[in-house]
Length: 384
Length: 93
View 1 (cartoon, each protein chain N blue to C red):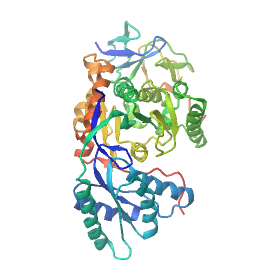
View 2: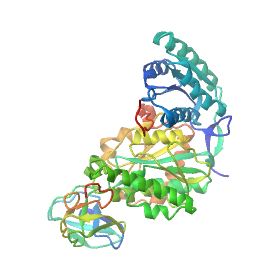
View 3: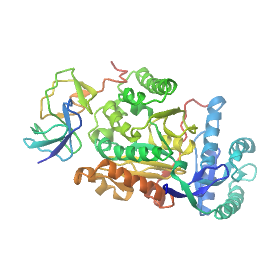
View 4: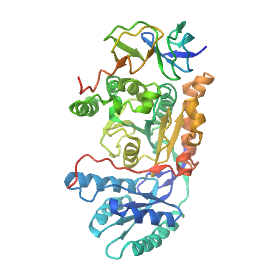
């Protein structure tokens, strides 16, 4: 019998691995109310954002679309939008409703924060009651879309956690599922190897254009970007150059063909391995995965980066024996056996695949239990 | 003996998976065998040179170019930001 996980089947056919009610800020000035409502109602998560007020044109459209996409994520059972005024909140609601999930709205104008939080608390409580009537059901692994991330990388990442994630990715793709790798700048120096795996010329061209665009941007700044890429902690962990980091990072993508190139937060339409063009910083990159509809993220770390996404549970995988001691509370899956007992990457990857199904079925991970979660939609233009 | 991993037969650096002290012999594993003597202390996870690299020559790991030597690197030397650098995305060159 084909492997399954226990997920929440949504009206649009997608399967969630969590059943949160998302309380979403429509702009930055709503965040205090969003946090207050979420704190008052068990079963909700706060999805805060920065800016939006003052953004315009395509940049505003991108910001609102990204917030709506977080609301549409299959892990979300229902949405309460917190707006300053009616029009922007309604614009986000309009983009979530086609998913079939309940969407409610509260505003800060004209009644003020206390009334807004009181109304929001009542509405969120009703949404949680409604969500709690859903039950987990067996879903095929092919329903999963998994983001592949690394952060706080060191030389152990390219030798242990990243290839283990790659094996898991190959297993999921084999089962008909989807994986997305991103962090465009971390392909500089390895792009020729990855481009050769593109399924057709259009995908290859789009992928190479994304990496070239990132490198051109870095060159235009007129500096050696190594103060940021590799980051100071990467270098302390033994990584010297972006090329070295890229060659290790690419191992997360396993060996399957590259089926598509996505923009920030764009959901894949095909199954299989995809690349998403997005900045490498974990918080904004993970938010891009969540907006693209990923239900889970596998996050390899070397020297240790604890952050997870609010909407999409983020599994921390580590092979550095020192980090596994010093940051033990932040790591979900230990792959140090690669070094310590010559364990095979393929065996560890198979175990990770089983663990992914467990987490998909409801097993909690550290970033959820300890609430080490954050949201940041990327910004590409200046505000008014 | 500290262990180091060589990922491709053409590589001129190996990755230490134990810390090495100056003068200590390090075992090469993976795609090469033998030993290299550390010319200085090299931390866990850092690279050690296993074949002479001339000034300006390519530094190879995974059988791929990971940068160029900014000064000559001798076998047993710690290979890192002080003696090689990226050849990509260099707005300063």
